[in-house]
Image (tube, rainbow, N blue to C red; front, side):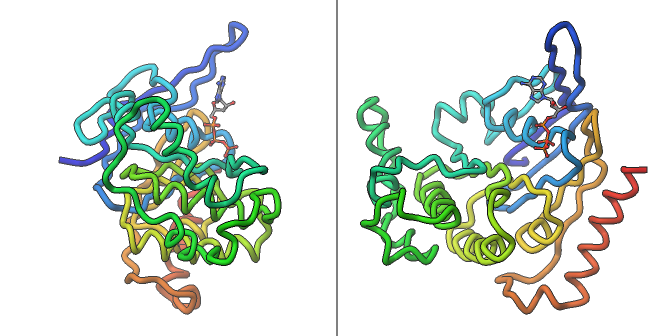
Length: 258
Ligand SMILES: Nc1ncnc2c1ncn2[C@@H]1O[C@H](COP(=O)(O)OP(=O)(O)OP(=O)(O)O)[C@@H](O)[C@H]1O
């Protein structure tokens, strides 16, 4: 059985008497430990689908199951780590203190601490921040802050990470570097990741599966398996195979633009 299963999901928003159909008949099955990207034109419902899977928004119709639980159950069971567009760090806390924050909050709330807790310093080293463990978050660049957010999510003990355009606010060079650091940390931890992006390159480079969505109402137009070998390295971006997948995803997106 699939780890995450989305069946016949529809989402309609009603605002000021106006209905928006954001998602129509979404069906998706994801295996545990895979990296999956959602790509599609602006407004096609990528974030909405991510939020439904993560139990932050209810669907209007349909069923979502996460390891046999509803998304809300899975959320209260701490199955999800979220990585938003900008890392939510406290600027006056050090990097290490920010890494520890979710555990402090859970402890205060009396929640059971996960036994899977990983060494935050090692995680920071794996994203190239070994020298910044005791720096204040406000002293870091945007890209460095995002790296803390990613390391924190990987260290959270949550088996599923939901990433909503985590690189969108960063410059091209930083994005490129970060995508390799994300690959490295993912290849070590093999968590299930659902990654929303507008970047064909990131989708193909990072993913086992690329879910291509069409514009509103958002539907899944194709799910493309990316059969590129792992671990993936920078040289792979120059290969014919890599370009083949980029063209495949691009072609699918263009077809849907009409
Ligand atoms: N809370 C809400 N209330 C009303 N409409 C909403 C709400 N959230 C999203 N929508 C609408 O649902 C549609 C899908 O939005 P969503 O943010 O999921 O798209 P997206 O593909 O993630 O877009 P982008 O790539 O621009 O971030 C859009 O038309 C959006 O305006």
